Amino acid sequence: MQFLVEDNEVIQMEDLPMDYSADYWVKRYAIRRERIPIFLERVADVILRTGKYLNVIRQCGKLPVRTGMVVLKYV
Image (cartoon, rainbow, N blue to C red; front, side):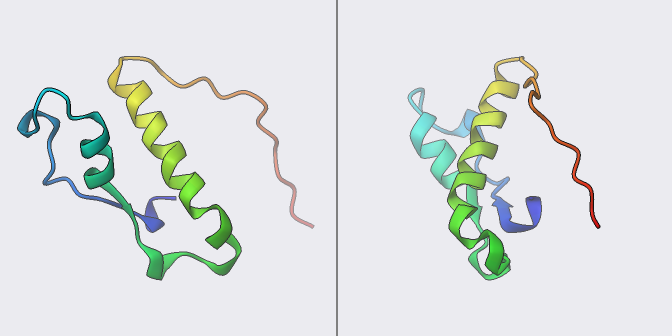
């Protein structure tokens, strides 16, 4: 879903004060509203928030566990 999320790579954790958490995540990633397909408009903020959480987990040195994956079949 990277096509609808902009990564502001200019913002680096090291450049922010020690208590950076909220400010960093708000400034680092943003939704590209003009690129959201109509069928994803309602869940765009959830997609962004989920991606942020996954990055936090990765930065802690953990790999997210994927459970309950369903294979989609197109007819």
